[in-house]
Amino acid sequence: MVFAASTVRGAASTLLRRLAATAFLSVALVGGAAAAGQTLASLPSGDVGARVRGDAKPIAAWTTFCQDYAAECAIDRTEATKITLTPATWAAIVSVNRRINKAVEPMTDMEHLRVADRWDLAEDGIGDCEDYQLLKRHLLAEAGLPRRAMRMTVVIDEKGEGHAVLTLITDRGDLILDNKTDTILPWHRTGYVFIKRESQDTQAWVSLGGATSPVTTANR
Image (cartoon, rainbow, N blue to C red; front, side, top):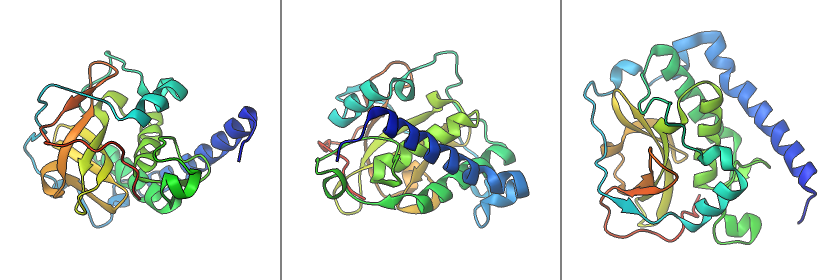
């Protein structure tokens, strides 16, 4: 189905405003308690991050996404490269992760759009793995977290399939936001094979050492 560009932008703006309002409501009301069941104190104290091992080829759908959503891919080198986790920041991260996982209806791009792989902000409330993570990053950046420290990441999941997660590079190590679970885990405890992620220094990708890169990340 084809919509006029103004209609799509209007629908997207309305959805993002609604999600932003609901995502941060619990933070405003209960602060750190929004992390119910998973506390900042439960995270590792050491700064353990995935090792970057050189350049990597971007996912093709990411390249198209960056053409359509240039601001989402822009690198601001004045931003911090790490997120300093405070109780308030942690509460916001947990809240956004859980609420977007609940708000977006899971559906592959082939089922939804009849294309193999498309990256967007789930403007119509439907998306697959990368759309969840892009929307989470959008909302967290709107809340003031440095986009440069939130990197889209490609992994091989427990099914041996390509999957997209969001890496938060923090002073407590690399933490993973994932639509498959509300629990935020250190990268090395996810069970995934980490392939590559967006660079923090330029609009490109870097390798994380995984042997084989998937062509797409189009699963739920």
